[in-house]
Each structure stands twice: as structure tokens, then as C-alpha cells.
Amino acid sequence: MGYAMAASASLLFGFNGNLSRLLFDGGITPVTLVEFRMLIGGLCLLALMLVGWRQGLKWYTRQWGWIIAFGLTLALVTYTYFMAISLLPIAVALIIQFSAAAWMALGEALWRRKLPTRPVLLALLCTLGGLLLLTGAWHLNLNGLNPLGLLFAVLALLSFIAYLLLGKRVGRDVPSLPATSYGALVAAVFWLCIQPPWTIPAATWSWQNLLLMAVVGIAGMAIPFALELGALRHVEATRIGIVTTLELVAGSIIAYFWLGQLLDLPQIIGCVLVLVGLVVLQYDAAPEVVAPVTN
Image (cartoon, rainbow, N blue to C red; front, side, top):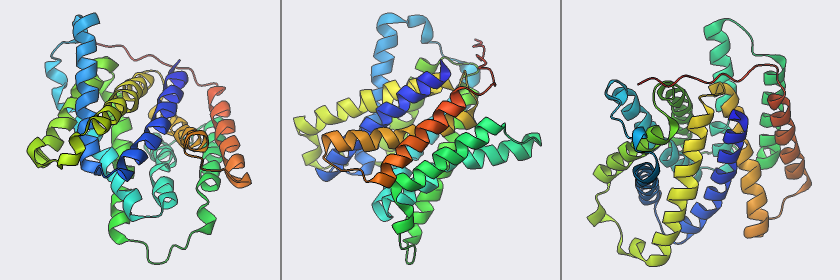
């Protein structure tokens, strides 16, 4: 169940990446998109709970420190990623961010003084190899990379790891819907302080942009983040980090059918490798453990 939730979230994130590209091409800035994405997603989940699940709208007083920290990682993870891909070759930014699973596996091995299981190591090798093939990393000239872009890429990596670990921690005591809603609203307030509504460019307020940003907020934030946070209650954060590489496969396939971006043979092999890694991970002997939710 946890893997299915994480995979579904990755598919939606892949769709979100292509839709976000259309908005960027139309002149929407990363700050504006993140701001609207978090605000719309958080309010939609809040409205959903008001209508159908009011018992989820508890205050969770003892957990608000963790929720605020989780919300700040939501605020940073998307923005730093968008900034990284705007300043670096997209392949470099993707490789740095999606290496999170490898760094988490290393950290877990050092912390627990125990190597990951063979299926996890094999899944890591398959997904990282697939990532290299998907991004065409061997074609890159790494000389003269933008230092600010590298800084944002590293910050995106750290923010992503923090998001997974804090999501795991918050999920111990707060169900995924209120945790995602409250976290998104914390992120929205953060960005509203950075960019108040009256400073947003006038072109942003066209009905076409607002409609697309509403779709991003619902299908690219509220649903996938709630699914991913729910998955973290069932599966270790390192394994979820591996599953997130499916986002690149989904994004590439959607871009092929929607935007007409062709895939060459190495990229197709890369997609297959990522999928093989996820299948290996799915059939690992490690059981899923559901974290209890306490009040």
C-alpha cells in the first residue's frame, strides 16, 4: 500500500512538472508558482476535511513545532529545485536532487551501523543508473557550472531529505491530510511574507494562469503530497526516496505524448532501469509497518 501511494504521488509530480513548465514559459516566476501551489493545495485539503472529515481538524498542539518545520521544508524544496533548474543544466539539477535516496541510505547505514539490504542496494543502483541515462549526464560539459545554481541544487537536495524525514516524524502523530494541509499553509504564509499579493505581476492574474495554477495546487500539490506523507507512515523514508525517481519516468513519458519531446534509446533504457529498481524494491522482504496515530 505504501509503495502504491508513493508511486501514485510520483506520477502526479511528473504531470505537475510538465504543467509547471507551461506556466514558466508563460512568464510565471518560481516564487509565484510555489506560493499559489501551496496556498491552493492547503486550502483545498482544509475544505475537504471541513466537508467530509471534521475530526481530522484537530489542533495537534504538541506537534506544531514539527508541523512548522515540515511546512518550511515544503516552502523550500520546490523553490530551490526550480531555481536550480533555471541556473544549471537540468540533468545536473536532477542528478543532485534525486541522489537523495543514496545519501539517506548512507546516513542510515552509518547511524544504524548496518548496511542496507541487497534489494535496496540493487534498487539504488538501478534507479541511479536509470537517472543517469534519462538525463544524458555523460553528454554534459561540467566546466563553468553556475556556483549559485550548484548552491540551490545542494539546498534542494537537503530540503528534499529534510522533507522526507520530517514527513516521517509528523506522520507518527498527525494523519496525512491535516499534516499536508497545515504544512502547506505554513509554506504559503512564508511565501506570502516574501512576496505579498499586491507585488505579484499583473499578468499572473489572468484566468488562464489562475486555472492552471489551481490544477497545479490540487493535482500537483494537495493530492501527491498527501499520498507521499501517507506512504511515509508505511515505508521507510529511504525507500520512498528511491520510489520518487519514478517522477522522472512519468515526466518523460508525459512530455513525449503531451509536448512531443522524443525519447532516445538510452532514455528508454533508463526508464526501464528505474522501473526494474522499483519492482525489486517492491518485492523486498522488509515488511510495511503502519505508524500509529496518537492524539
